Image 1 (cartoon, rainbow, N blue to C red):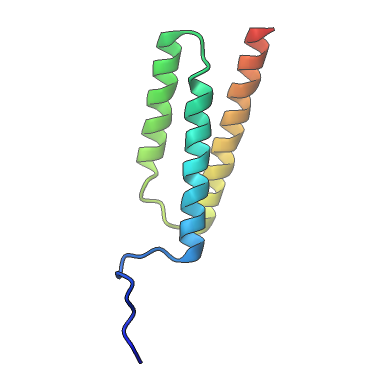
Image 2: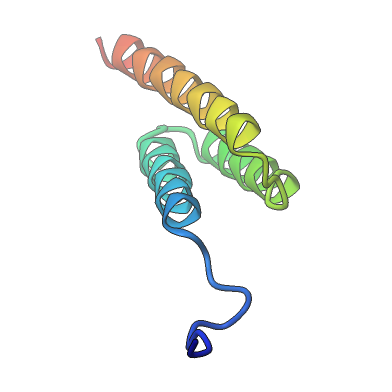
Amino acid sequence: MSASRLPPSALSLKQFLQRQRVLAVYRRILRTIGQVPDEADRRYLRDWARDEFRRNKEASNPDVVRMMITQANMHLEELQKSLALARS
C-alpha cells in the first residue's frame, strides 16, 4: 500500500461541501447587510454576523452545522424581507 499524499488535516468531500455552503450563506448575509441604508445598523449587523460565525467556527458535528446553516438562511430571509418592506 502506498501512503496518502494528502495532509492529515485534509477535509473529506462532505466536509468540503459543507464548508462551501457555510461560506456561501456567510457571503450572502454580508452582501444583504451591505444594502442596509443606515451605516450604524449596517455596522451592527455586520459585527453580529461575524461574531456568530466566529463563535461557531469550531462546530464539527454535521447535523449541528446543517441546523446552523438553516438558521442562517432564515435570518437572511428575514433581513431580505425587512429591506424589501423598507424600500416600499
